[in-house]
Image (cartoon, rainbow, N blue to C red):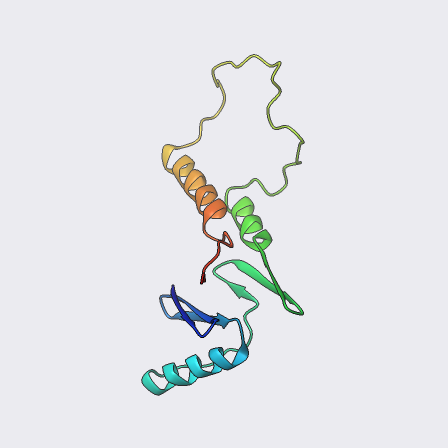
Length: 132
């Protein structure tokens, strides 16, 4: 990720392998950035982003919303948890824990699930990217 702050305007470039997302505080700085990059590299403008790295981008006027719903559903399907019912509290504090005597999950699958959940909770946080 690259940021540039100039005269109170901000442009942000997010680059992942061969995909690039360019956005900013005004269309002029975004357009100038795109023209500069196009003069240096072969690029194809795909228009306004709707999904980037599994995060759905929803634009409502001047507001941009990020939704992890698509990525979350993909994870649930991948690990066969899609059809589970949600509960308000996943753990009953009154239950007594006992050793699992049923089918165990492989350590590699467990690590994949934990890694995926850590990625889900941290990679699309809308932290402040431009500051004065």
